[in-house]
Image 1: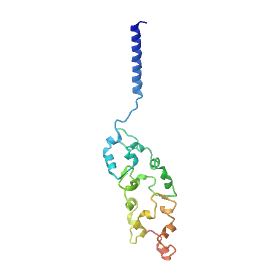
Image 2 (image 1 turned 45 degrees about the vertical axis):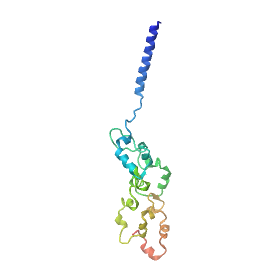
Image 3 (image 1 turned 90 degrees about the horizontal axis):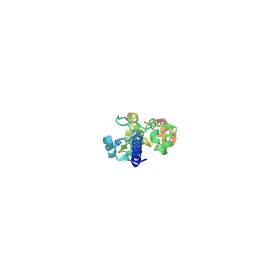
Image 4 (image 1 turned 90 degrees about the vertical axis):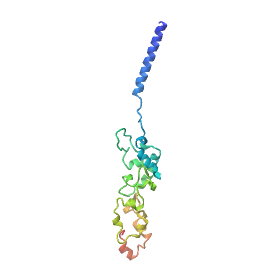
Amino acid sequence: MTMNRKYMVFAFLIFIAALTSLITGCAYQPRRPARSCQDCHRKEVNRFEEAKNIHTPVEKGNCDACHERHGLVGSLRLKTKEPDLCYSCHEDVKNKFERKYKHGTLDKCSSCHDPHSSNKKFLLIDSGDSLCYKCHDKKDFRKKKVHEALSGGCLTCHDPHSSDNKNILVEKKELLCSTCHDIKDVSFQEIGRAHV
């Protein structure tokens, strides 16, 4: 084989290797999103960052912790439904929510908690009894004679998530009422049968 021919074979093999590399390289190149979530959702990110309390994934810019990417066509897609999505990180509190009596909103954490950020502690969407009154009619608890315990707020007597006691009370009814009332007193037994 002449020297010229060796160079041609060598050049041809290099060409084939380069072409193969180019073809397979393009075929297996993973697609990456051209933009981050924050690039398109800047207004929302700015609003989240202004709050006192920011959910950790939001603070770290890790939208993928809860959301699936949607590409050019906008849609809100969560990785899974609540509350399982929340329990994927907050597994430590799951057993607190699996007691016998559950609050009606327990299957949707975002009914009370903002999943991104809030100026309220625990990422609540409102504070105090105002949060409870988003679902419970305030007039039912503000009649002519108001139960004194309501001055301390709903959480004086009720657990916001779940309880082993009826009406999601923080203690058994008799024990809870006895912290303020003499439950053996006849007048209590006559009037103390309801909240208001």
